[in-house]
Image 1 (cartoon, each protein chain N blue to C red):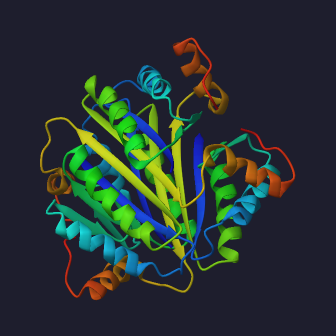
Image 2: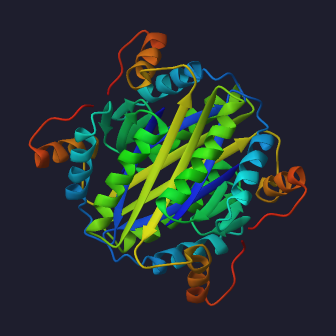
Length: 101
Length: 101
Length: 101
Length: 101
């Protein structure tokens, strides 16, 4: 399944880059396909793989703070592998042009 | 932690009440504190308790369809139990009045 | 349309109750049907009515802070009025029982 | 402000690529900075610019269907322009390496 997640520490400074860097170190070490964007991180894997990774990231951010808000969006479609690459390509093919990523 | 989730079957009829009813049967059987609202279900528990429940609900809806989009929002605050009741009460106390629920 | 929204001030204390109270004062003054839950506020109205209200709430929280994260989920279904009451009732009817709200 | 949005037609086939293509044509014509990812589209602009665009996309998808679920996440930070490029760069600088996008 394809999953986007975002982790926001609440009650620390308005610059949360250190926490985001910590999360992305964990994502990179996780060996799962991922893509980051300005609003979150997209990963692809099974429910258990993905949730194990997000739990680890969420715990790492909560460790140094008091409160964390994490949002997770799951798009699960039967029989469709490698959607992290194919979803955008499929839209580009329909439009006959390349889009900004 | 306090968690709201919502499960949408994609590619079936626009009436998804049967799937929502199935989800709420699972939530009720789960023995965790919950509250439903017109846009989702809020539950309170540990990461593992909550994710086990949502995985079960997600799988039940996917079983009869091709594609499911599930959104999960986690609000995790250290040292604050029973937030499923206390969060709204605390706002009502600040405002000095009862709000529509 | 039915809309749930949630506004989180980032970079202030982990207790954000004052900001939530400010938001709910605006919602109450807005005269639109609403329901609050432990994770957000659900309102019902047209696109322009709802977005005008959320813009006002978002601006009120940003006024006293540096950064705000606002999430909005819209469920828009043709020809279905009063869904803020009917959606939950319809599920309860299917299940033949009342649910916790 | 930086905004990610995603529009899901409910009650049509599980392949929603035509609707997504329609949305991205509108986004491209909008002349605002944007980036697409496998789970949504990120745009940057003022509240009114962004909401006008999303309203147009939402209406275009609803036109051919019965029900649409649209999610919007706003990250609004005072005094920070060009965040659609700078947010990811700032994390890469902290990590001292380039990340997958």
